[in-house]
Amino acid sequence: MRRPSSRLATATAAALGTAAVLVTTSLLTGVPATAGGPLAKAKDRGAQELGDPDYGVCRGTDPRCYHDWGNFDASKGYRILVYSRTAGPRHANLGPALPPGMNPALGDANAAQKALVEMGRKNGFSVDWTEDVAQLASPARLFGYNAVVFLSTSRDTLDDAAQTSLRQYIRGGGGFVGVHNAFGTEYNWPWYEGLLGGANFYDHPREQPGTVQTVDRKDVSTSGLPNRWAFTDEWYNLVPFPSRVRFLATVDEGTLTQGIAGNMNHPGHGSLHPVAWCQYYDGGRAWLTTLGHDAKAFTDDGGSFAGAKEFQSLLLNGIESAMGKKPFCR
Image (cartoon, rainbow, N blue to C red):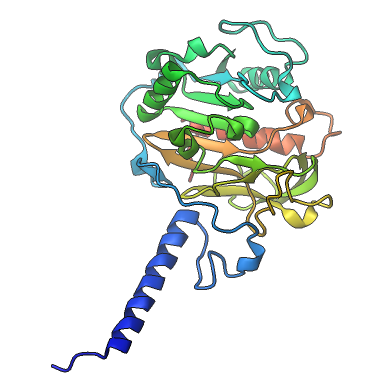
């Protein structure tokens, strides 16, 4: 039998290698890949090569990554825990730091926490809240909640016991919701970065108006939203870029008149700048949004803050899907 020339063999191997890279890129990013880059118009993507970490767990949009191990009884109702401890910068919408314990008194300045408590009251689920890390020290305690919401937490907000507890809770089928500066939290814990969808906050431009694009209206968190809606936020730039997730909403960078480059010179994400997504992760459910900087986004019901109604709908349905009250990530 005549052997192929070495030149032909080399060309064939290169072609196969390129195809493998394209398939891998598409699977990891959730967007189409081409030989010219991860998008058909790579120049529109913005920042490139933002990491492809592997967190060593089952993660992505396949529900087989979820563990239905009987830790939650829907007949007892639904309940969430809102955690807003900050060990670094603190968003104004959180108000003053809360004292130790569970469900300490909330003042008017604790706008974001009060908004989630009211959201639960109006929609038939219970809400507890705390900034006391000791309240997260036991997975048995966390299993009393259908979802845990990290509400603009910051930096190293968990100690060793709480880290272990959160991981065991998620592995047992728990729900997680990360809001806004949950992406500026636990930078040096790879497992948590994976929980966020393989993403982390890097920087942001000025807070400014922009247009949110609903890119997947089949999910319960976005099904009631318009295709495009006005909103004002800080529009987080991310490193790494989310991977193996279902993108739900993006920001149209072309509507950001004050620019997208951040204070540490991130150039933005071009034609795919996500602001909300979901995934299964290490046995649990995780629903994520980088939105939620301004207190009025949580509290305005008079129409003076554009997009507040849409944001609150997005967040409410995201929480209810993460807790298993509504279908998740599909």
